[in-house]
Amino acid sequence: MGYSPWYLPTVVGDSQLRLARSLGRAVTRRLGYSAGATLLDVGCGRGGPTVELVERFGFDAVGVDLVPHNVRTARGNAEQTDRTADFCVGDALSLPVTTDSVDACVVVDAAQYVSDTAALFSELTRVTRPGGVVAVSDLVRTDPDASEAALATFADAWDMAVPQPTAALRADARRAGLVDIETRSITAGSVARFRRWADLFLAAVGTPLGHVAERALSREGIDLDAVVEQVAATRPALDAVGHAVLVGRVR
Image (cartoon, rainbow, N blue to C red; front, side):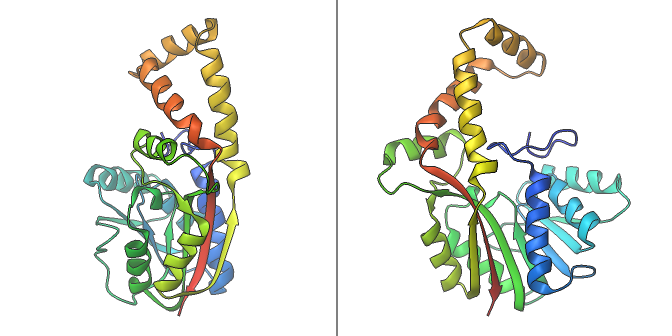
């Protein structure tokens, strides 16, 4: 759902395009320019954010994704726009990109699907030239006393890595060679919204609204019981999960 051409929310409620614009502004501010800057979108999915970064900022962008179907779809989506973006299949931990070859890397809500963020940052800094910019959005752990079992269940429900604290994310980035690191929370516009939505959704399931939702979802080939199970598994951990953006410059 996150890269649908007609509706672009992430699983935690905020728009992928809005987040891509935010990362694009952060990169532009750090570089001092955007038009013609070479940018790599790692974990690009079906290309929505990549195309947005090209159209809005004028980056010379390439999207990389592990899934060939996503790359084919991204190419088709890009062909429908006035701007062009290139896409290729590749692993975020072994990018098919020359060392020091891009001005910036962005990871738009894809880092949570990589279990080794230290290796991810090392690869991002490898392909980004010295003085270039890396900008990443990721889910983070906000409560050190949160239930480990609840966090593991949350991660398993969404096929993600278990969220780590922002401090650990910063440490991985710093060890990989990023400096002038800034982090900021965007939880209010994403995870906090999803918490409210999850509570409302679970409360409505046993009411007539639940039957309406079941009919609507079934028309799309979606099993309501599976959605309920996923949201219910997610909810206990949501009070301990946040959403953060990290931006740094390659040393």
